[in-house]
Image (cartoon, rainbow, N blue to C red):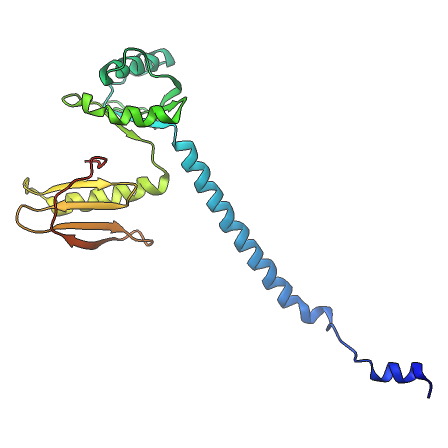
Length: 213
């Protein structure tokens, strides 16, 4: 026996298996990859929505007439600017009503600002709107709006007709604070299954100035 025959006999052989035996593994790998890609797309979509909302405000309580034109909206923005205490009209990109027109209802106005810093300056001036029918809030993401709606429903349920009970919703914190006259403050939140749950009870007042009624 020559050396080449000995090398062949000593050399181990490896079998990669038949193509059919690898199909389940390949299928699972493909499914895992599709799942990861889907999750990444959702993350990117959420980030894009968040960044887009950084320049937007939603204004409630400004009267609306049927057939409103962009010139009417521009006048609304100008009047809002004066009520907020500005000497000049807010620098904005565009404004539009949200939803479909319905007689007897006032649709909110979405205002897209040119600069993000203007958004926070406007929010700091909303105290000037006290005593009017107008309210300004930032444009929340879909998930934030859903949480806000659930927390508001919980607030109404708890308060009932008792005017001594106060409530405040902190949308960004996903938190509802309920203040009783004779009990500790209760904090509620919305879990991943969209259920409103009691988070904790604390003995302090409602202090956050960024809260929303």
